[in-house]
Image (cartoon, rainbow, N blue to C red; front, side, top):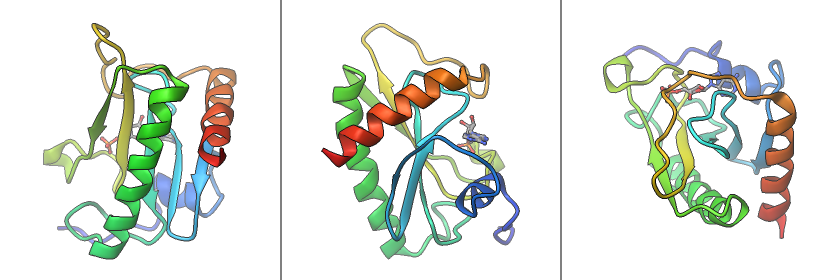
Amino acid sequence: MAAYDPNNIFAKILRGEVPCFKIYEDDRAFAFLDIMPRAPGHTLVIPKAPARNFLDVPPDDLAHVIKVAQKIAQVSMKVFSADGITLQQFNEAAGGQVVFHLHFHIIPRHDGVAMKPPASIKEDMAVLADQAAKLAAALKA
Ligand code: AMP
């Protein structure tokens, strides 16, 4: 497996070099909206420490990220009045990974509504800002 590349887009987001719609941050995890959501509220949760994917992440970092992902999934159910959540995580190009910093997708789902194809439509920035504000507020409540 290739080494971690510190110039991947999520590393740049973590360093504040690229903007994002942040919804949560603590000392070890960071969460923000996917700009090409497969459904409204599509969130990405990542460890702050470098990890290419599930295969190389230190187990303690993984455990913390999963705890944060669960909390965001629970809150997303309420904020988006969702009927369910799809959790996705891809490893290496053959596994569907495009950005090589470990991330979990949390995708709110509604009965009978299919997900959009991956990376298909860039969401309106005002919509993302509104959703991020609602999620961040609900996570603090
Ligand atoms: P994957 O590596 O296949 O799990 O998917 C990477 C995800 O990152 C896709 O869902 C993209 O829409 C998303 N993405 C790529 N660039 C950005 C960005 N700058 N901000 C937020 N999401 C992004």
